[in-house]
Amino acid sequence: MATNTWAIDPSHSEIQFKVKHLVITTVTGHFEEFSGAVEAEEGFENASISFEANTASINTKSEQRDGHLKSADFFDVEQFPTLSFKSTSFVKDGSDFELNGDLTIKGVTLPVTLEVDFEGIATDPWGNVKAGFEVKGKINRKDFGLTWNAITEAGSALVSEEVKLVANIQLVKQA
View 1 (spheres, rainbow, N blue to C red):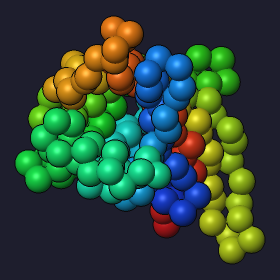
View 2: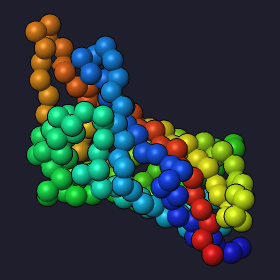
View 3: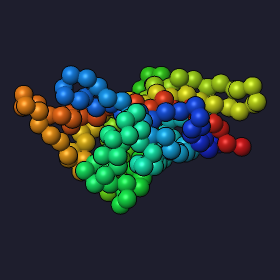
View 4: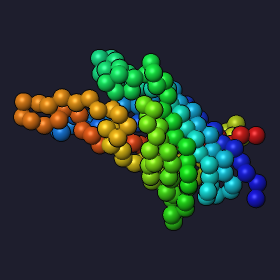
């Protein structure tokens, strides 16, 4: 079977994270600069997937918070300008997939498992073949060295340890 190469279409994709703030609300952020590639046979099962994001491109709609996230307290973008993911398996589960791989943040590489909903394949008006996926998962930020926190007067953490990952990815088939 022929292997196809696919690239993330950044203008039709988003890489988001969600973190509880004060245990009562969720703050959503995203990375504005990222890239990725997929090597796959028809149907995508057993695909090889790689991804990289520019940590300095983090955006939570708050310049002050973004500045703090870029500091050594969190991503330390001067020393660690990218975060990356490399798949170890991509297994079909019904019409969807389980994605396993190694996530590297702030120089720490750990295995993660992500749920992937396959949204389908379509051809755009210019003849480009596109594939859509929604990727979901959770990590503990402290496992990756993102350990800063503060305690409120009530004794609760300012920022949760759990980070929800949500990515809506549109791939474009390469010629």
